[in-house]
Image (cartoon, rainbow, N blue to C red; front, side):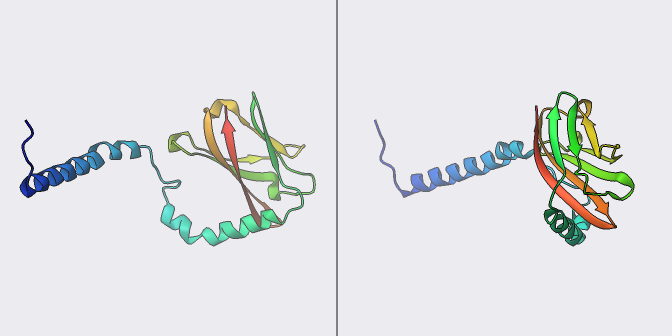
Amino acid sequence: MLKKLNWGHGVAIALGSFIIFILFLIFVYSNGMKNSELISDDYYQDELTYQQVIDAKNNATSLSQKPSYSQDKNGIKIVFPQNISVDDSKVNFTLFRTDDGNLDVKKELILDANKQFVIPSKVLSAGSYTLKLTWKENKKPYQLDYDVQWK
């Protein structure tokens, strides 16, 4: 037997539904946000100097030939064109892991005689990375970003 609902029952059902919805947001939805991290621990300081990054990226887009990367079982190989003369042959690279900051790789390497270097596979885990290359040529900064899927 169905009892007739009056406005009091409707208010109680609406209030109960609202409370269940809020509890869902608190306990279920927040669990999915556990791995969300900032790209950088110094986010605000990085934001203040971001104009330098914009200038470096603009310098890199004006290059006729850009550094390239390839993947094999040994790791990720970065090759610089012969027409780019890197100051002191020093290149900074950062591999940002999109889902886990503990797997980030950041290092400064020196190019070999063939203007290349390899990021070894032993420091990489399967997943998606953002590869950021920064270098200077004649004290002018350059930066390129690549999306890399390591398998």
